[in-house]
Image 1 (cartoon, one colour):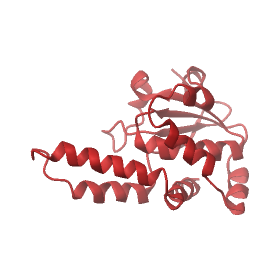
Image 2 (cartoon, helix red, strand yellow; image 1 turned 90 degrees about the vertical axis):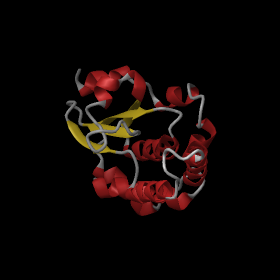
Image 3 (cartoon, one colour; image 1 turned 180 degrees about the vertical axis):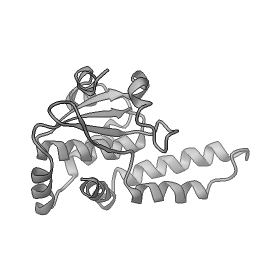
Length: 182
């Protein structure tokens, strides 16, 4: 299936948010409170062509999506780029073309295309600063066979999501990462 067909299969942001059952409040917090510098707005308006479209592979349960989806949605609005959302586990044929490190179905993944459906840019699942936070946090976890591993892992991801969806400095890393990729 072409990227255009995948795009057509997706839903707009509002419909995606309306259907969310998990992390909706966190996602909307980032979306509503995110601030851009004037130079960000100028950069995104100049850099992204208004005939681009984008596909977002995501899921409402994903903590990274609660951070990155609202940031990239706002960037797309500034740039006049229409995004459509697809749920990862319902679209594995597409997801498996965009594996992180060739092995992981990490999300969110943003696939941008020109008006002819040619892939122009892929971004995701997170900024390098957020990746470093994840790696540092995982390094503090006990071995996977430890009796308290699952409890500690759940606590780590809960605290990680709380921090990434409430700290504007972390949101800024996503903006800068997208700018760097462009």
